Length: 385
Image (tube, rainbow, N blue to C red; front, side):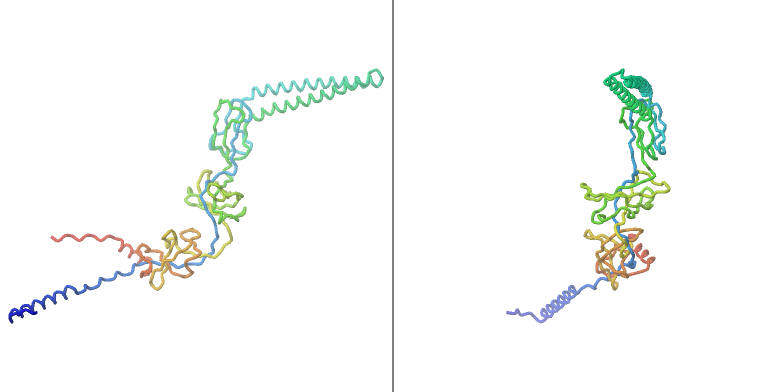
C-alpha cells in the first residue's frame, strides 16, 4: 500500500531518487584501459650450418711420460751430490757418488782370491801332465791319473767362482755412482751430502719433461670407440687458455670403477717446452668424423628446467625452443637439434623477453642503447618547495 505524499514532498523525493541513480551510474563507469608497454628491443642472430667434429673432453693434470724414483743400489755414505732440484740432466749423467772404500777393499780381496785359484789350477795342471806321462810309461795306475784330471777340473771351477765373485764385488764400484737412466729434470732430491744410505733408499725423482702426457677420464658413451692415434686438443689454463695439439697414446680396456669413466692417455706436443708437469688442462679427444651441425652465439643460450633453450623470433614473436648443445668454442655453441638453418634467434636482450611475447628487433647499437635506457633506474622527482 503506497503512502500518500504531498505534491511538494513528492517532487523533492523524485529529485533525490534521480540524483542517486545518476551517482550510481557515475560510480560504476569503467576506467580507461592502461597503455600497453612497447615490445622489448632485442638483437637477433642467424642460425648457421657448420661442420662439427664430435669430441669428448675432461680436465686432467699434465705429467711426464716417464717418471723414475732413483734409489741407492749399494750401502754407503754420500760423498758427492752433483745436481740440484729443477736441474736438467742428460742420459747417463752422474747425479751422486757414494763412498767406495769398503767396496774397493772387497774388490782387492776378490783379485787375491782369483790369483790364488789360478795358482792352484796351474799346479793341478802340472800334476796332471806328469801323471799322464807316467801313465804312458806304465809307472802310474789309471786311478791316480783320474784323480789328477779331477783336480784340474776342480781347480778350473774354483777359478771361475773367484772371477764371478770379483765381478759381483766390482759391481758395487759401478753402483756407487748414480746415473740418470734417461734425460729429464730433477724434481726432487731427498738426500744430502754426508748421509748414509741403505740399499733401496730413495735419492732423486727424475721426470722426462720433454715428452708430456695427460690421463683424462672421458664419458664411455662418447669415447668407447676411440683408437690410439686419434687427434686431441689441450687447453692449458695457466697459459691463458692456449690450445696445444696432442694425440691419443692409449685407451684403457677397463672403465674406472670410482668415476665410471674411461681413462685415455693423451700425448701433448710441446716442441717449444712451454709446459710443465703438474699444470691443469682441459683435454678434448676427437671421437669421430666430421658431421654437419648448427652454430649459434653462446649469448643466445639460457637454461630453463635443467635444459638449454634459445628464443626464436617468428613474425615478431619470441618462441622458446629447447636445444641440445654438442660443444662450445670461440663464442659459439654447436647444436644438433631444436632449430634450423637460417632461423633468427635472440642474442641480446634476453632478460626482458617472455615466451610467446612480442619483441622489437633492432640493430645492435640501438638494442644496446635501449637496454641501457630500460635498465637505468628512474631518479626521484624533487619535492615541491
